[in-house]
Image (cartoon, rainbow, N blue to C red; front, side, top):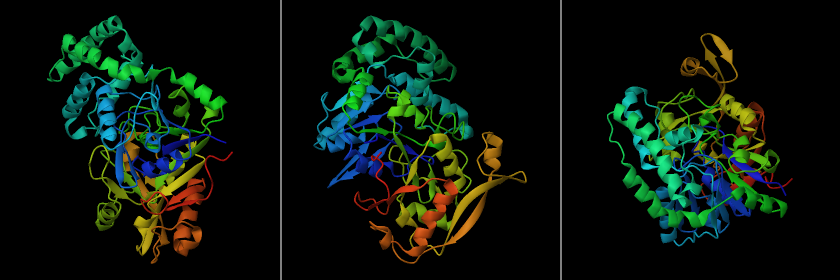
Amino acid sequence: MANVAVIGAQWGDEGKGKVVDWLASRADVVVRFQGGHNAGHTLVVGNQTYKLSLLPSGLVREKLGIIGNGVVVDPWALLAEIARVQAQGLSVTPGTLRLAENAPLILPLHGALDRAREAARGDAKIGTTGRGIGPAYEDKVARRAIRACDLAEPATLSAKLDELLLHHNTLLRGLGAETFEKAALLEQLLALAPQILPFVEPVWERLDELRRAGKRILFEGAQAVMLDVDHGTYPFVTSSNTVAATAASGAGVGPGVVGFVLGIAKAYCTRVGAGPFPTELNDEVGQTLGDRGSEFGTVTGRRRRCGWFDAALVRQAVKVGGIDGLALTKLDVLDGFAALRLGTGYRIDGKIFRHLPAAPGAQAAAAPIYETLEGWSGSTRGARSWAELPAQAIKYVRRIEELVEAPVTLLSTSPERDDTIMVRDPFQD
């Protein structure tokens, strides 16, 4: 049986929660491999709604969850999330959750710097969550990060805090923000160490054992390809690589272990925060999409910007993200539209592009080129087979496949877990 990696194929918030939950019920272990608690997955199981940011979704299905080294971890946020889901009746113990010993930690100073920078940017702000994810990744690359394993070594913590505070307090002071004291931070870290360390281990070794035993591994991505720090709409991106290749390096496995790559895309397009969005609709249609789709960010709570499906953008995500097949979600949101539009490319300064260029000026100037399709009057909501779909809905899905150059593997027709049409089982070789 193949392993599966799930990544977003647009700008995040594509409905990964339902799809990941559906797949997690059939996996043996679920691995988070990048991002931080700026990610958000909402899972509905029975009468319970779980909102997860750091915890792998498989925990809801009583599967082993692993937080890989590619994730930056706020230990206080992790403990708070564990307490919250435990209050909902979910068991999270060192037997069900493992944390990579080499995962970098997010400290309060990271969030303070994140927020101070955004405030200083004014109208040019990126739209970060202010939770310190970017500054924590900076420290990782600069080789001054405090990692999970360091919690077991008080002397290491003390020495690393000296270097961190020298750097961060200088920046905070320059931005007019409050600085941090070493003694208080060291005390906080030493206090939480006994709560975090029982979860810590070299997870690469466990994953190797699971792989050798033939267990199904689900790699759970956060954000999406167009928020990738290399391949997204830079600088309006997240601070990590979100493509499927990161599943290997962010978990501690070889690239051949990743398996089938499933990209999640809505049947239309949304984005939270600032940055280019060529097919955005600032009209009644965009408002309708947002209302029908309940378009509010799980983590941010912000209203998502809405627009037509951008096939050129998703095709780009398919190519650079390594996507083998798409899970197309929220098809039912499009029920009743007389006509639908698909973005097939861009016109920039009189030239036509099939992809979104990397230059910020070109991205901002990109005007979408549309193809118009007939809508459908029937309902797709709750459909569980192709036979239950209106003919025009099937034509819409097939045209998307042609334009993005990837097959639709799963089709979601409502928020309910079982309202899913499976074309191909991603776990099958």
